[in-house]
Length: 82
Image (cartoon, rainbow, N blue to C red; front, side, top):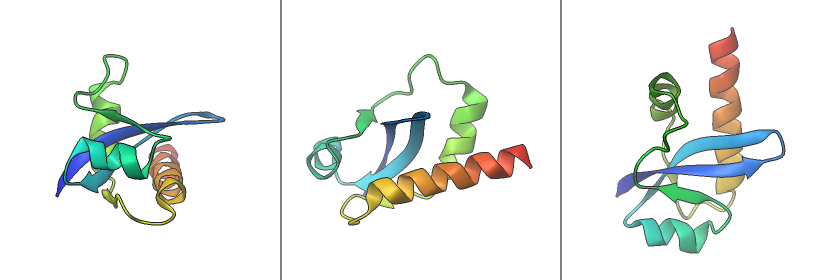
């Protein structure tokens, strides 16, 4: 399986993370609410991308993948602020 960078528009902003799947289309099929990025967008800093890359990839078929994505991102941000 590969890791795919995804974004999810949440009420407080964009949430980033990685989803593990065989192909990007599999991510879209299981999680239509996320955007899959082949290349990081220009607006994301290399430092932020490096932080995101430390997050574990969420298996595409996990029932609560969006909740896991949100939790992982919140934990990462809390650790960065501490």
